[in-house]
Image (cartoon, rainbow, N blue to C red; front, side, top):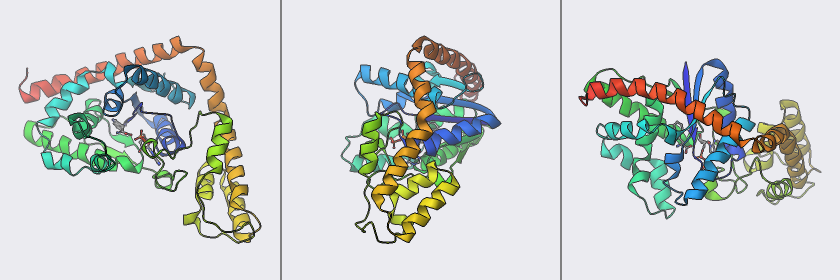
Length: 321
Ligand code: ADP
Ligand code: TRP
């Protein structure tokens, strides 16, 4: 089984990214041949400062390695080190119907938030399809917001195969229901673009403060709190803490006399404890950036070999060779 996923270097890693995509991806990597990459071409749709893009890409590399990616098992690379994906993007564009992209929810969302769309943003899902298809992946671990992009990838691969013969494997999304949409501190989906995230590698004091500012309803400390839908601290705690600990908190909340403030403090402690080893590892890696760059160079080589293999078949199939 071949597994592929990517993350844009467009800001700081948050617990939605980690539990929604990174942890499931790292678990899946034990079961097959994994390709994980830093989607820096994609990030160009929102980041225009070169120094920022370069720094963010390195940050994602540190994040992934600190969170446990094993570069011996997993091919880990920067998207732009495999420029063949941009060639494949063009070729796939020529079998992609316009309405498929016009109906794309994440595109429409960004435009409705006031972003002035460029062609890159519009063509974003085709580049993503190229990422996935160029290594012939079977499984793509992602959060729920990426579901439509994977469906588009399947449709594009199908359209290509019908037109030119069977070249691509049809991939499938892998989405864990319990962490498909992690809520942010304002109750909407946690996302960099909503400024409602809880960072993993942020300063400890700032992280605690952020958690204390999670929105809740206005029930008093004494009141029993049974409605899970309105209880973001408990929802997050359930993902981070053990099942026993989570049940304990639920019981305390339901009994009354235990307030949201208490729950948030426990959440902050659990979160900092959970990520302590990764924070320590990241600090270590920061002192050894040559190693990180070497990992990416090595990943680029392995990813290039796969990309070349697919591109030979693709060029031949479409008549470019
Ligand atoms: P953001 O929305 O913060 O910009 P990205 O688009 O960079 O996040 O997402 C990177 C990965 O993390 C994707 O697979 C995405 O589905 C997943 N992800 C992002 N936010 C969440 C969330 N709140 N819950 C679950 N998964 C998420
Ligand atoms: N669009 C994805 C996101 O914002 C990042 C991404 C780019 C990706 N290419 C991919 C994810 C290929 C999975 C597979 O999160």
